Length: 67
Image (cartoon, rainbow, N blue to C red; front, side):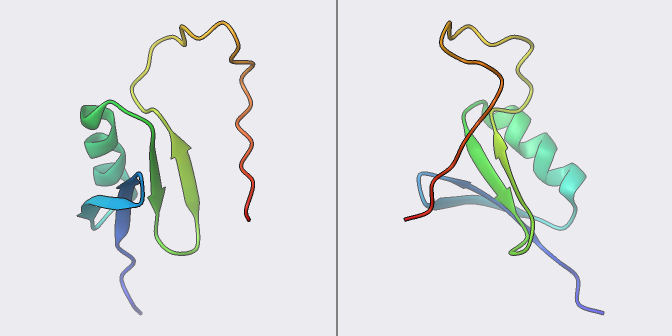
């Protein structure tokens, strides 16, 4: 069984690679900006560790377009 590695990406730049999703989430929380976390199959996006969203236009949904 191949072990998946979780990549934390911001602006198409790999910030870190973690062996577990928990480690990747902890890194992303400490980084403090919008990131993508992926293992190549699953993709999780957001700004982690945020207690509240201060953008008045944010409605709780994030949509992503693939070109």
